[in-house]
Length: 224
Image (cartoon, rainbow, N blue to C red; front, side):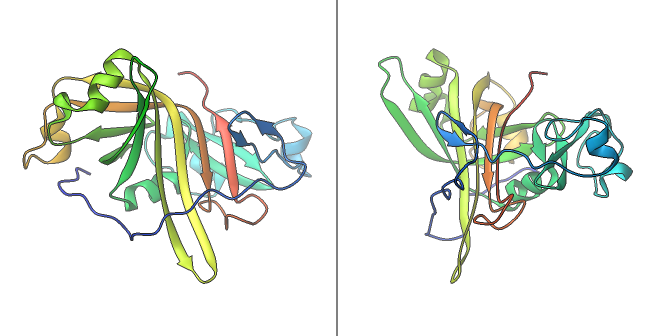
């Protein structure tokens, strides 16, 4: 659904929680690892990885987007419906937000971060970003020189108890000179826009409470 205005769920932000001791690590994040299951899934040797293409009925959950592209991932005993790298819950979370932050790096290597409006494309498994004056912005110049990009959306569901939620996406940008006004509803939006194609997704507090078992979900996205 196109977004024509920016907003925010509140002035507070939260850092992702630290991984629990003993969890697998990858440079820049903590991968939560996977717990073995009992029963036919474990017997088939399918635990802890992307399973073969499966219909929604096998997951016990509603598929978002193209069902043929859905996969099941088993983490900490929880089956998660995957859509081109995103889970169903991650897509629903992103669709409920209005503002994110995008990080780029220019030719000199200096980092740059900016708040942006966005929309999630569940069928393509991407986040689409547009804005006023996009084609004249520093982030656009940065991405033309270096397509590597990171994107973060987070909020606090509660401050008492402390309940952070969020998702970080690392990948590359695919730039488009036309189509921004149609995607984002006009109102002065630039024609230029770009899609963030994920290579790595880290989320917390979306599948389960952030500080609980299975509350952090980090994985690489298979190339399409």
